[in-house]
Length: 165
Image 1 (tube, one colour):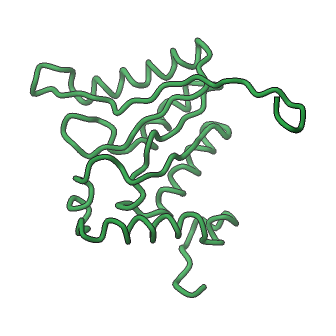
Image 2 (spheres, one colour; image 1 turned 45 degrees about the vertical axis):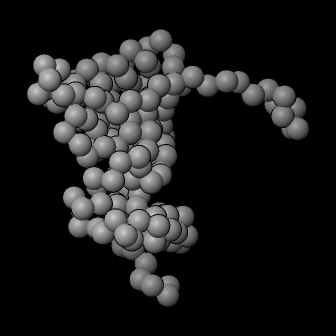
Image 3 (cartoon, one colour; image 1 turned 90 degrees about the vertical axis):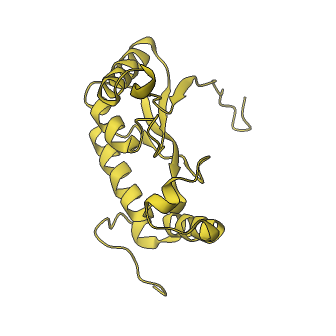
């Protein structure tokens, strides 16, 4: 029980990076994406609370855009929360991340969640034109923008505040 007298319940879900390595005889990326949609449908049907997809930018994973994959499942699921297992915020634009997940939230009737982090692999940095020596600074800057930008919190999805606003 919580201090307010409410009972807390345990939540159960699953997360994945959508591994697919067609070069090693594994399923194709397209097939793995279709399997993920089926997994989310089944997870919803059996009563799991959340399904989360981690962002990766490597050939052996199909999850370079979790919000897009989760949006595909939003149309065919009813209750399960749809989350990123990690969104690599330090190599992404936090406003774009917010917009993508706000769109997912609308499509899913409020079931979207973002789990932001640094990521466990570094391939996204050079892929998106960032220098790995700026790793700490990028994470702090992008996280700060995502959390502090008042226009994001007020729902102005059209533009990002300029420095000093």
